[in-house]
Image: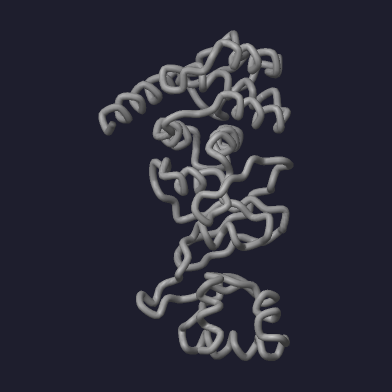
Length: 254
């Protein structure tokens, strides 16, 4: 138990960090074996452990704290980032982690941790002791990858819970992506939701200037599409109804 208080202060740790603490690999292996046997720590994944509370018998860190500590560059992203900020429409039993370090998806304590490739120069902030993509970065990333993660309807519901966005930061995120199709999607969606975000005409002009000139679909396989000439984009006719309903639901809650 002599190392428990120090490990408790760390919350979670790698085998390498434990070796630094106790001095040798053999001593670290002994601590891991004994502490796991006593229920003081649990294995999250290979060579990575979380400390268990003596009072609650539960991990002392949340899934988001664990995810953002998996590697030195790790941060919480996409729908999990919405959840961190309290803007998640629903809680997923997944934790999306952006990192350059490759790892296979794994499950711990009922949550599946999924790796997302970390894009260069993403904007990361601290929320408590959780490393997480900024709100603007989270929104842009979620729109870009909506068909891979969460789905567009869920992304829109999460966006409706966001009280405000900095349009300059959104443009910075878009510029870092350098993706004409993403400018199209964001231009269209923010224009449809402008009653909530109140972006300037300059924002839409920049999106229009940087948009791809190719005609694209907002959602693959969607039916009843309507073409929006400004954005060269086909979008489902039902989407506006979803956005309007989301606005009504948001204000009803508010």
